[in-house]
Each structure stands twice: as C-alpha cells, then as structure tokens.
Image (cartoon, rainbow, N blue to C red; front, side):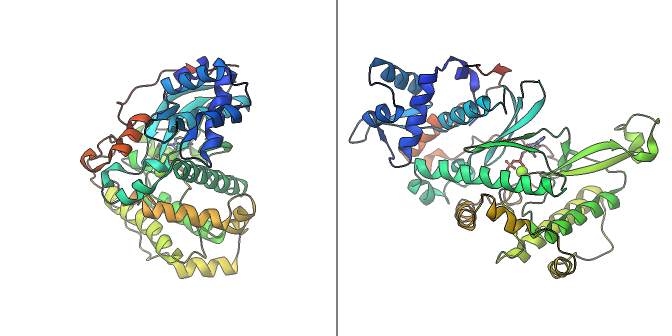
Length: 406
Ligand code: ADP
Ligand code: MG
C-alpha cells in the first residue's frame, strides 16, 4: 500500500490515543472489542471516543470486523503507518512527507523532510504484504496470518535493519546514516545516487568490481554476510576524483575518467552472521550476483576466481574486525528475533530481491506494479484485507503534505 498522509493533520490527540488503544488491544485480540478500545484509550467513554472510532474507521486506519461474535475493530497497515509517523513527528525525525520513490516487495520508500528542510528516507517495512504474484504458494501462510503477525514481523524487519545499519555505520561501512526507528519504519539519510542497476556504463569496471568484492570481504571480516548484495541494493555516488579538480563537471559521459564511483550499501533485513548454518551459500550468492552482473552489463570478467567462503573465513581469523554479528545481538536484535524473522521470510519467499526480479537487460527500471495478484484464489477475508490496506486502490501520486504540528 502507499502511504497516504493527507489525513494526518486532521487527526486530534484523542484520535491518536484511540488509534494507539486499538494497536495495544491487537496484541492480545484479533478483533479488539469496542469497550476494550475505550478502556485502553484512557479516555472517558463518552461520545468523543466513539466519534474518534468512527473517524478512524472512515479513513481506514482501523477496520470494523462485522462477522465477529462481538463488535470490534482491528488496526490496518494505514493505522500502523500513522502511529509510526506521529511518533517520528513528535521526536522530530520527520517533519513533512514527500513522494514515494519505491515500492518493493516488502517495503515502501518515501522521501520525507526534517524541520530544517533536509531530505531523508522513510522506509516502511510491509512484511505481511508478501508477493501477491506467488499468492497461491503462500495461501496457507496467508490463511494463518493474524494482525499480530504482520505487525510483529514488519517491526522485526525494521529493528533488524536499523540495528545493522547503525553497527555498520559506526564501523566505517558506506551505508546511509540511521536516524530513527519506530514500529515497522526507519528513517535514514537520503543518498543522492542511483542504484547500480541504472548505471549503464562504468568507466573502470575493474575498479568498481574490486571495491564491491572488497566490501563483501570486509563485511565477512566483521562477521557478516549481506545476503542480498545485488545491483538494486548498491547505490552509486559520483564524486569528482581527486586528480580531476577544475576539469569538466562530473557526471558527463566523456568525463568518466574524472569521476570516482562510490558504492553505498543499503537494505539489511536479510543479513546473516558468518556463522550461520547456510553462510557459505549466502556468501557465494552475494559474490556470484556481482560477478554475473558485471559480466552481463559491463562485459567485465575478473581474472581471479572467487573469492571463496574459505578465504573469507581465513581472513576473519587472521585479521578480525569487530564481530558485528555478535554486537547486534547485544544491542537489540536477539538471536530469537533473527530466527523468527528468517523463518517468516523463507515461508513467504521474500528473503532476497534476487529471487523474484526480472533479469531481462532491456528492463532496468524495476518499478513494476505490485497490484497484479490473482484474486481468484484469495479468500474473501483476504480480499477485504487487501482493500482495507489500500492495495487495491491505484497508484495515487502523493503531493507534498505537511504533517500537522499538534
Ligand atoms: P527493499 O527491501 O524493498 O528492496 P530497499 O531498502 O532496497 O528496499 O530500497 C528500495 C529502493 O529505494 C532502492 O533500490 C533505492 O533505489 C531506494 N532507496 C532506499 N534507501 C535509500 C536511501 N537511503 N537513499 C536513496 N535511495 C534509497
Ligand atoms: Mg532492496
């Protein structure tokens, strides 16, 4: 679904308290009974609360569940978005919401601004969405899914991404600056660059290739494997090379030699420890992804085989960096959380961009429409879910919207 922040500024403090009450109730109730919402909101059960409830339902932040034995509501993705956005706004990590620049299988990427006008990225994790193109194989999973699980899994993905991004950043890896995390969202610095996927020519492919392989090896030295190291998750910044000062502007085709391409790594929900049971498979997949891409796109083939997992392990022993896989466990992303998230991502088949993407060279822009699920097999209840989460509505371009100040 797309984030539609336009109702944000019309919501009152009471509305947000009621919304938070539905969220809190969802932890133990699939459908939160209305009296419980009133109680959890801490507001007096007058007409005000009921007015808030009907307001929130009208703008699809909560959904009335009709067939339940009792009258009740559940939180929608939109509702969770608003709660997160409200917190980001209060904590001054987000001031206004701009354009959506990406719709991934399991995330939405939105440009937001801080109060000083500087641009940032809001990444909203949407693990419950799964790929509707594979809805048949995921049907059993969908049937069993509960409100609690998509909220929880999306939050896990956000916590993981934020924790890893922070650890990487603190240790000098070229990643965005992590700014804030709340619920299923993170705020990070905007990297003014295109994904490698959109770079059609590279002046010195050998140089960039070597840098990317060095990054994989350095990650391993710090105990980590990215797990989805591909041309979508590497952003390429163009910087003037040190010896090119005063020459023609960077970026123009003829001046490729005067431009240094600086790779920035993003997208961390699937990172694994180098001690993971399948570490070698993930490591090889990362290396081969880059190899294949450089061969196909830039017709560059490295003279050297590998690097192989055994070398990465050897290097880790000889010259260990800080063990970031251990550090993240201590700083908020436990082994149990890692297992839960990994199991979920496997079940719904979203553990890497590589698994699903269209490999045709003619189609470098991967902005496919995500709405083409096969509805014939989706049960009624799931269809309602889709409607209510906004997935059925069409791609509505967002305008610059100010988030209310209250
Ligand atoms: P997903 O998990 O859906 O693949 P990503 O984190 O890879 O999400 O982001 C999807 C796309 O959004 C990226 O390929 C990139 O184009 C853009 N993007 C993500 N984060 C940033 C950022 N910090 N700065 C600029 N662009 C970004
Ligand atoms: Mg990605």
